[in-house]
Each structure stands twice: as structure tokens, then as C-alpha cells.
Amino acid sequence: MRFARRGVSVIAAVMLAVALMSGRASAAVTSVTFDIGHSDCTAPGAHTLNLFLNDVQVASVPTTDGCTCHENGMVVTLTDASGKSLWIPVAEYRANSSAVIQRRNKDTHALELQFTVPDHIGCIAVTPEFLIGGNWDSRIFYFWTHEGKLVRKVISSTGNAYQDMKFEGGHVVAGGVLADRSGAVDWLDLKTMNHVHRMNVGRTDRGAPFTREGMSIRGKEIVFLPEDSPSRLFLFTLGR
Image (cartoon, rainbow, N blue to C red):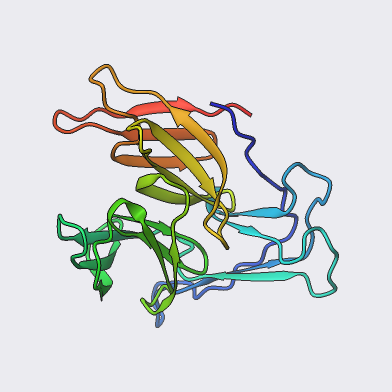
């Protein structure tokens, strides 16, 4: 399992938010803005900016024009940079059906927002700009705003029936099952949703491809939840 993770050292970032102060009128934080004035253009993967809040990575965004210098820098606003929300697709268990996309508080599980989709949505990735959902076997990718407005649809051309996907390192990382029933993880270009890197995976000792069901990735660690009950988690470390 070998894939070079992109990274960059961001020198300047300014967070604009409403602070909660005891004894005064308060408001919930609804967004965080990063004002990026400088980055190391010679670092590996310098065209991707990893954004951190309280030492936790909350997003990865590509630069707008490679490594070209701009007078005004780059401003990125995240509507859920605190990571306090979970995005959950609640779908009927059949193709060509319907789903409800819910945003819930990570701590209390209280419903914060939801919208309906006239298709089965089985997996979802959250980027700073969009929600990206895959329908049954991810034959179609749906792009929505964080408020639920449909932006575009992309027909998948990868031949991989994605069961789960996440946004990491400037790419959509998706795990699924190929036509020969083997498993693979693809790194997808955010604009085209074409795969730019594929990592084939093996099977558990029960015969299930590691990418048969749930998957998560953060940095060099990738986690699979491939089996039905009793389920087991499998953690791997990606090489460079």
C-alpha cells in the first residue's frame, strides 16, 4: 500500500468567529475563515493546503493557480470547520429509491439540517465547498452545497462500485468493489471525479474485500469495516 500524502506548511491563518463569553450575549460559531498569506512553495505537495484548527486538520484545499504568487493571498471559509457535525445519508435499501441527508451534532446527535434526495445515497464526502454523495454502487456522484442545493451530477467512469468515501488531502478517497469482486481504494480528482491513483486491497480471513463496506482515512491511517455482524475494524498504515 503505497501513496504519497500531500502536505504543506501554512504560515499564516486567521480565524474569524464569534466567541462565546460568559455573562454576555452569545452566538454559536457558524463559520471559520482562513486567510492564508504564505505557504512553502517548495514543499512536497505544495499545491494542496492542509488547514488546522486547534491542532486538528479540518480541511484540505487545492491552490487556485498552482504555485503562482498572488498579492491578496487565499481566503477559505468553512461552514463546519469545528468538526462538530456529522453528515449522514439515510437511504432506502434499494437502488433508484430515495434518501435524506442529515447533518447532526457530533456530541448530542441533535438534528441540525436535512434535505431529501430522489435517489439512494449510500456514501458521502464533505469538502469545504460541497457535499458529494454516491448513489447505489456510486454510479452517479451528486454535488450539493452545504445547504442542500444541487450543483451538478457526474457519471462515474472508474468501474469501482464505491461503498464509502471521504475527502482527504485534496482528493475524494473512495473504497469499493471492482467487477471481478476484488476491492480497491481510489483517489479521485475533485473536479472530474476520475481516479488518479488506485490501491488494490486484499480480503479478510472471512473472504470479504476490505473495501466491501465502511472506510475512513486520516493522514497515513486508513480504516476498513468490511464485514457483517460480527463486524471487525481493520487499521492499516499507508506508505509514502
